[in-house]
Length: 210
Length: 190
Image (cartoon, rainbow over the protein chains, first blue to last red):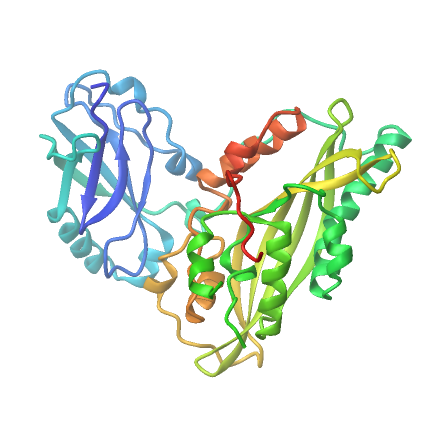
């Protein structure tokens, strides 16, 4: 099972990988459906009957308990659909079921390596209530610690405070200088060589000639 | 260089020189983009003379869509990769400068300027873009622009990659690869 990452496709749209070594929930958007559903492998081995039940919304986006259940070649897969809040709000429940049925009838499972059909079929699926939140959980940040190491960020020596203040001036130079076309001051906050910036297209792709 | 060539050339970051030039051209063409700083803190590692500036800011851009004036507001966190070293004009004194800037796009929305009238935006159109900068993307796309996918939001691979790059930077490591600094970058406006 080491080389058998499974790619699930529906309506020609990649829905993500179901991997035995690295499980995850995928955000999928069936064509024409005004919302989102989650596709979450809950058990990939028929011999094992444990069902993965996410306890928190973060388990949906960061499931981590499937690996130990996936040591043998799966013949079938059981998935749970968690319609996101937006999905439920857009469609009545009957229509949700219909959409999901159509969605599964169009699923194709193939090896992500060979791109050939993989002999695995969806055995069962179930729909579960959405997480009890006002937002789809993939919209939100993890509740877990993001930066383990603590650096000098408050207090400290006078030198540290002054250094941090100087860096904060660099930051504040972006809105203050750029918004008012103070290009010289704006350029001055960056390194003399090899300074790079990544933004969405919103800031920099309007190059049409007047 | 015409605009089509430029768009194709942008697979990632821009040099500061090109970014300023593009910003000037955008403004000359009527782009109305402002930023609202909401708060800034800094992580400092004196041992490496490096720091990460974290600036919470709202990007606001005025659009006219379907004849209706709206503001798109995108809450974000600007990440400044800063270092302390002498420059050619600092007289040997070490000064702080910014090497890279990349953003987390947290959430966005569209606000009617008159408080009442809103353009009709299809959900399917919004869903083409990552949550975090969906409205911004749709509004930009309405101008005919291509939108970068995969930028850091609050819950995607870009989020993890940028957080890791921030710590690596503080530890003195090279972050050109995880950030995607273009290799053999050629200026766009020479």
